[in-house]
Length: 395
Image 1 (cartoon, rainbow, N blue to C red):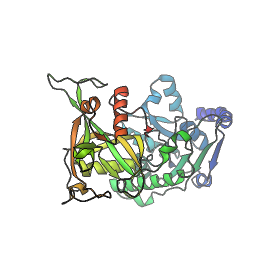
Image 2 (image 1 turned 135 degrees about the vertical axis):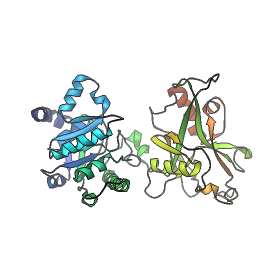
Image 3 (image 1 turned 120 degrees about the horizontal axis):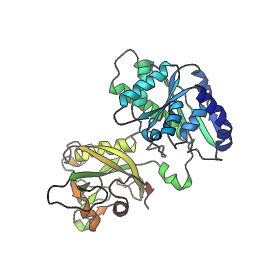
Image 4 (image 1 turned 180 degrees about the vertical axis):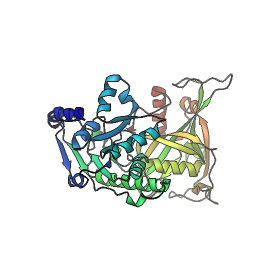
């Protein structure tokens, strides 16, 4: 306790002089004065912990990635400030720690995105941890947003939203639907607070543009059998396959087969990760876990022929399922092959399949859009199969 007070007093002048902080809607903080609550915030940078440490005049507990405490001195320092590490196998311990913080009439701070994210339209794909802790603790949720990644000598703005009550979920067993409902409420509130408030650097302005279509880049890694060999690009001992949809359409590629990335349009208020998960379930019959958006690109004439579209391409982890056209897919409807698109040509045939990645990398295999396929070839050659080290706009 004394350590926290000392650190807050000692670092306050440096914090104010470096980051020029400004808080908005402080009345919501006053509403919860002296009460425990779960503070949820968007995650811009590792400095967010410092910003929130000074922005909240209360004792905070927070969870963070395990790497913060790998070394003894940082682990001791952050633990004194209320840190608890998140590991793959300690979800129950995280919940217990969070509830213990609330029982002490303190504030539990959570970044529910689980990672640093910069795009308000794709970010805030919230996990249910914050909702579970708030419901089990019987406390409200205070939403908070930070306008930019904190950097020295730039204004850092922190805005609070109205507390989200959890009373309706009390007195009954917690179920997935309740967790999802509260998470959706938190997500929508944070997204509304971010719009017009978030600062987007000019070089990343494209990253904040709303997305119309989400497509998946799904890689499957299969252990090699005896006698099999493949090029090692960071995962030795595996054969690598990419999920594509084989298509045939008159007027495209001279009527010869070509390949596209699976995906489709966002429905309603869907986010990119939600849309690509649904589309791959419908189009290919498989379950996947999206990880992040690595490419965005404009399509001058959209697939519906009415306006340009922004397409997002997400790396996805294959989980389960046999690849086949689902009966729920629009493409599987009777007569779908001969239905005409906006250009007057038949929609043609659809056939989802796994394609050997080396065949794509080493040949001019017709994969559309070509600019994304070419960028993917370049990045796999340079970065290996994981493809998580960059995100970019592809012209």
